Image: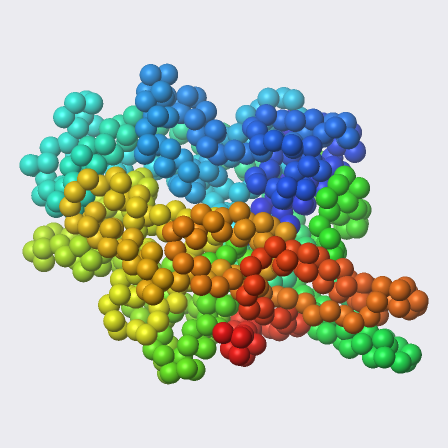
Length: 342
Length: 276
């Protein structure tokens, strides 16, 4: 049975690092582990053994049992087309400029492509643990809502508007004269564009049944996975972390990254040794303000959400190798594989 | 205003709005995507789609897509008044999910429309984050390329001119001196600079030097004084390494222990006012 752990949260909170650290911990505990990541910092990618972008899992040269792959959404969209549409239609789709544009711009589509990719690995039977670093759009919530959005996109709300209630054959896609709204749209946009869009949507519609079935499978896997929400004590990331709660997604764990030691805010004998002492007293006093701000933010958050919280210490330098990633995990004793059902 | 998510873009947008108003300008602060951040930093709960006066000199609004779409069709495209807008708006709304550039041009078009209509001295737009920015900046060209004739095309071409004119439009990028924000900013810098004039790159949350050497620190007894000193020195050194890769520009200090978004806005305004 493959265990899935989803690492979610807003941009810039250290999600990718935590996903990588969890992957290292899993592999060291003897689990065959795959880390699926989106766009890691270059040095972190190197630490994971990802020298090139690719959907295919690459073994880590330094740690047995650790594999990593990049979720490359453009390539995944092509795979979606070929998976769910007849080959001739898929050929037409992937060469259509609208398809390429939708693939690169529909944020839910990128999240959906990533989710399909995740399911392929979860169902391959090759892994004990798959750690997914989710795309950051909408603070990560998009990943959970993407299957429904994707189904709506290919389900043809727009196609029905362009063609009327019944789906017509490929020829005579829409009849301008009969529909006043289309006449105005035609004046504003020009007929050729509408026709092109209608043809594109008609092709895209062929993927509907496949995507509907796959979306259901994705939702089953998402419901069974352990969700970890990563945040810092800063207002922006906190707002995004709270949104998971608001839409009814219950995380297994909330990780507060970049936490400062509580002891810095406790009463302490000041240093009394000349000028550096004064500077260090003053420095500790201002960092103590940060400690209290972080504590207030965590207390406020837990009062609202009530999930298990774990803190990870603030490091001056982001980890760039396996030792550094190991230290992230061992520096947070409350963060254990058992807690995530691994 | 743009920058990687999480760098304090909305706070700086609000602070620049306050600075402009302090200089006697009439300002519209406009949120292009999610209004929560800008609203909080301007000290209000939510923003509406109609500009609302928040304090002397500052109005604020957010771009609500269906409202902006309606306005786009009526005011920007000059659709005939008698035409039934409902079905067209519904269709275009659905089209906006599919045809690249439609949603984007409605959003950036709203900002450019407000800026061009002469009601404000300055429109400061909290734009989409760096990852999505180029698709918005490119929207006029994308639309002009897809739409062969008609009013949408004409309007798109005039927006493109307005975007490219440094006297009309400037982009301010916000970054923090950390790896991902700096790398992402510099990777897209050239591409963005080809589409719009980059007026400034502002670095946010910049630490000051501790002024105590590592040797001195190592002689201090183990404890919070030494640990806080070491973390500060380490963070400062990492920040200097990354900020060296950014173009010269104003720096906003790191504010310790600040609680409300409104306080942050005023601190930022006070710190960069003299630098601009």
